[in-house]
Amino acid sequence: MNIKRFTARTPREALALVRQAFGADAVVLSTRPSAEGVEVLAMAPDSLAQIEQVHSNAPVAANQASAPAPVTEVQDDVEALSMSTLSFQDYVRERMLKRRQAEMAQPADPASPPPRAAGTSAAAMPAVAPMRREEIRYEQTPLRALINVQSQDGADSLRREQLVLNELRQVKGLIEERFGALAFMEKLQRSPQRASLTQKLLDGGFSPALIRKLVEGLPHDCADESAWAASVLERNLQAAESEAAIEEAGGIYALIGATGVGKTTSTAKIAAAFATRHGSGNLGLITLDAYRVGAQEQLRTYGRILGVPVHTAHDRASLEDLLDLLSAKSMVLIDTAGMAQRDGRTRELLEMLGHRSIQKLLVVNAAAQGETIEDVMISYHAATCRGMIVSKIDEAVKLGPALDAAIRHKLKVIGVANGQRVPEDWHRLSGQALVQRALRVNVNPSWRLDADEVSLVFAGLHSHAAAHAYSAALPA
Image (cartoon, rainbow, N blue to C red; front, top):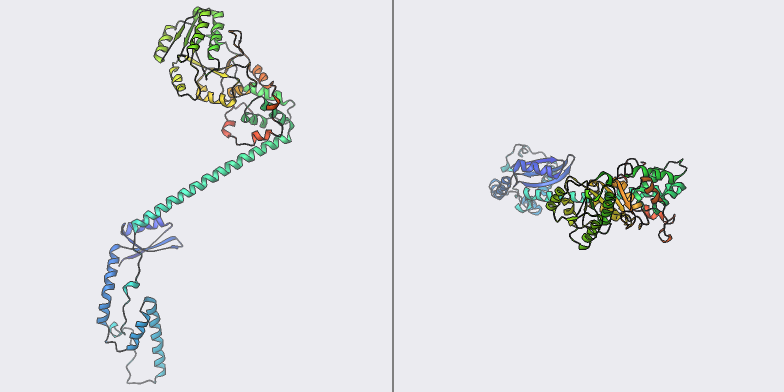
């Protein structure tokens, strides 16, 4: 019989040692914690068969080796105690005690036989009934089953630990954001200048992330917080007043954007401004709007007024052929179909305009919501555009959302459109003029936030990534 004891830090490591020593069919007798971690008592599968064979032959051997039971008292005691392992030990102690008492009570007799020495054979011992087989109990669980149970328990434990860690991270993030909002509101309460600047920027339609960035960088000794904020915004807003206008520089431009933002009208305004300076012979017009007949007719009407034919391209191959045909023109303007920023065809349109010579101009409706403008910027890949055109500023109550998106995406404002007249309502404004117009706003009293209600805007969750998305020139 080969029984070994294995100790390890975890049950899995201990079972691995058992499997390495006795194989996958090893018999685990017991497991218990120890100072080193876990202690496992195991033996080989063939050892169990040996134990069963030994105990099956034990009664025969005991009957052959025992005497003809000269002492009936011993047999009675054995039958009463049933001779389990513990009862046999009690029996031995009791018999020795009785024998010692008997020797002390009887006088010494020289004819009596001497006491039995320690080396007396087992045949002279009183007949002892063998232990019954059913009293021997072993844990005969295969090692492979124990390993599977341990693996399942380990996977469940890891899953529970991962869930707890995720919940702790969420709680930590929530606490940090809430305390950040409370700290910001405390700054507003302690500084009237910060509160006044926050109120003014909110009225202008700027995003809470940009307002938080500006207010946190406001100097304590600032005399005019509005002038300071205007200077910071002007420094970060890129305008095209310092470079040549696109109608002067020429090139190939494609106007893209969502539906109804004024792409066709803006194309006609730029075309009219170019034809006034350089003549219609150096101008080419292409339309990709094959979905709406009215849009084609509108651009063709402007083309007839200018004396410029309008060509239609249905795919990228035809567009490249038209670009080769109009390669001698100083300026080529491409009017695209208006598509919603979440339309699946938007990606096809951008791939169609992937020609290396085409410069994309993103047309943004100044009257749109800030979230809508941000969604348009992301869907039309504002980072790949040459610049942006802010249209319908005459309809917009707040110019802040459009300028906020331009600052965040570092997109240059090429020009603005403030009406339907061609080309009178096409302008190039400086960054200072745009910022001053955005800060000079009259908010309807129904939509104006009170000082106590400003906390509702900043008490919500905010993204740290949004705050870092602005230019490094903004105050930290």
